[in-house]
Image (tube, rainbow, N blue to C red; front, side, top):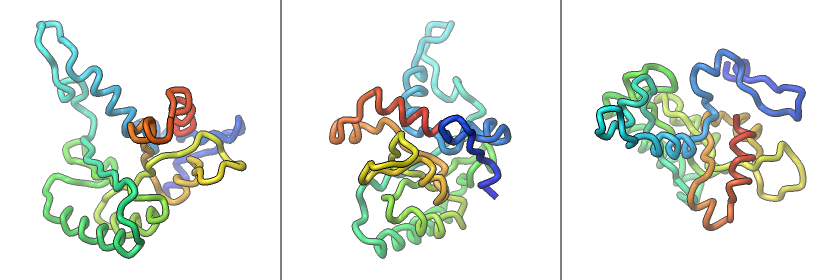
Length: 187
């Protein structure tokens, strides 16, 4: 099972992937951080003076199609109906697959609101769709009302976490320092 792929290290109880998971580029990864890093170099000038594409930069990375539900829908019933409808749509696509099934297909990831993660995962995982969390806090536990720890989202099956989203930066004043702490916690 997935739980055997993770271990808690004695140092501050930081979640560390086992060595078998490292080759998959850390599935509790930083979806937006990856986009930011990949985007910065995706259009850098190559030796021939032309622009190179992100496809040329990393040929072996499995493509990801992700959908952030943000604070929608507003009820569990609507979220489950949306997940069921999404599964019907995924059935019509030819080149999608589950987590690490193949480098030649596109992994599909959904980021539903926290209250719906577990039940949405139960529905979409049958189609190979992965779920992630929209954000985490950098502390393991404590008096941080409304916050969610990385270990919490991992325990409900999240394989990805969004870190550094522009809305978190502008609406909730997430600073580079705070985002860096979250990134370190997720890694």
